[in-house]
Amino acid sequence: MIKCKWALACPSEEHYHDNEWGVPLHDDRLLFEFLVLEGAQAGLSWRTILQKREAYRLAFDQFDAVKIAAYDTHKQNALLSNPGIVRNRLKIQAAIVNAQAFLKVQQTFGSFDAYIWQFIGGEPKQNTWQTHAQLPAFTAESASMSRDLQKRGFKFVGKTICYAYMQAVGMVNDHTTDCFRYAQLCKAQQS
Image (cartoon, rainbow, N blue to C red; front, side):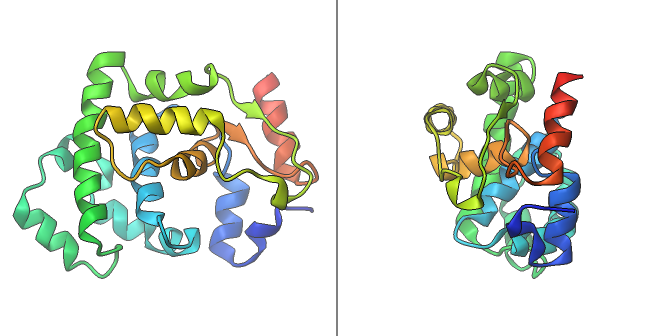
């Protein structure tokens, strides 16, 4: 079975590739989880974040945006001393600020899902990359998303992070065309 080359480095990446990467998400809690995790990844490998994902879920109250938005200095200090997550003050503060901004977006648009999917017209974009090297670092859509998120107060949402987010939550299908998941995700969209 052919898979995207990046997914073959370790079992956790392969499992993530086979089961999650590129699958369209419309659940606000999961969309928020990926927003926090993609921001935490900045400057690090995705493997590092995958290995810390369960610790993140525990440390960040299962990514409950209401709870995170209310984190105080005491909670921030506890997070900074938690070896299970990336202990970067700016990234931890960004998660809190992003939770607050996320809740405002939900109030404005009815859901974060309704807001975030508008950047690609509501339907996953089916790309046709033959090799991983063809994948862009960002697109016009991810740049537009980044600008709007920043305008709404979000942090750690540059255009490259936004494109990685789009890939993760299935807004774009960036599996290479020879990967078994590419056809599965295309077929799922047609159903």
